[in-house]
Image (tube, rainbow, N blue to C red; front, side, top):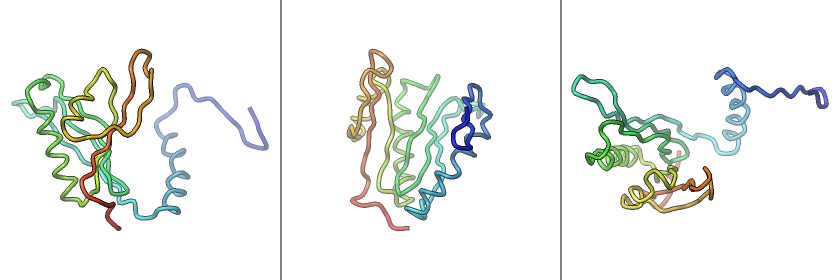
Length: 148
């Protein structure tokens, strides 16, 4: 479909490189509005006796916050490691001078777990997926976002 000289194309199985192309102008705009996002990565791995990764936490930092993108423990689930993994991530966030941590989960996953860790609900999408809700949580570590 063409609109005003632009071609619109639905990409049903897009190459991952397309994401970077779509993201580039958004990043440029965001950096113009709020420079020095101080972007970074953070991971806490859970490994078996042979050293293979069986689970852990994957997060991204930016604008003074840690976003926990993934927390999965696989076969290590139910052994108290989730609390320890989150504590390691929180300690790392504090050492980096971050103001807080945010994440999302579904009602069928672990909302009570995050609430026990001091996270507060800050948003919700009801009936997504049908019969469940997606919940967004935040935990403030300091009173303000650090300056870059």
